[in-house]
Image (tube, rainbow, N blue to C red):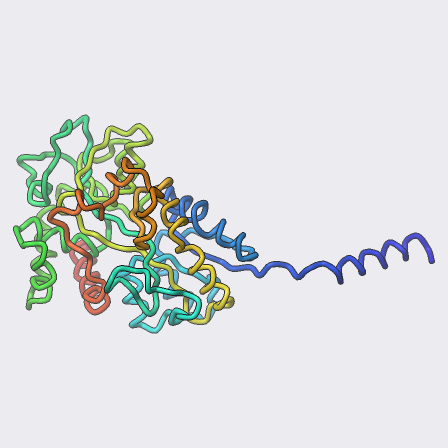
Length: 347
């Protein structure tokens, strides 16, 4: 046997004896600090524990990406990170696989928090943040003051999306937190909120399209008042920005993990979601961004330090005068609300 043949034979023998390559699973999440945290705290260690080769992608508009992939029949991601309102809407549109209950156990979730299609893993507040060089520590105390351009003159920055803004608009008019969705469901309720947004539009300098952008706006002082997510506001503050914010009157939302309809590695995706949502991994996410875990066991046993608890929107001391985002309402009325919002933006 020649030397070359011996080497070839050895390579073939080693290849046959080697274990099969780990299955590749693709997950699409938010960018910025949030996306980094989801990777480092959740999917990277979970994938390693399961022996999965996980590939991460980022997407600023996951819902649009999900629609495109499923409608085209070219689904390239196995797990999609969505806001729970988007998850409910996507489920109604038939864009998601039902969660495998044998793999993804939701019994640990708070009552009413579970979903057949999108597993909630973190909570956050849409908050009022401001530039302390403009207002010091005395920023707006509620959405009525955020809308008050005489008391708080300055440039605003709002998300270019109807969700959370409609709730804030009605809160600014004095609608009680528990009555916001009743008001939105009344005839003309969506128009009422849109009209209120139109009043503030001349004072909006930036309509942001990603959480990372909103944090950069705060850090750079591009706007004086910014509607953003509490984790993004805290990140900008931690990065040295002249930033303060309040949890009072925040709109509490949750984010979830879903499997697109026709995902190429559906079963492995289900296993990865379950592994990502362990108490330890959800608690670890708060090291990267101050979004509260949905698994109650993550709060137990000192997994999250008391100082960090003070930065979570759903902590008892922070959840004052808040509105909990109603995913079912957004699933039913989301398209109508967004169409009205887009029409207002184009005027």
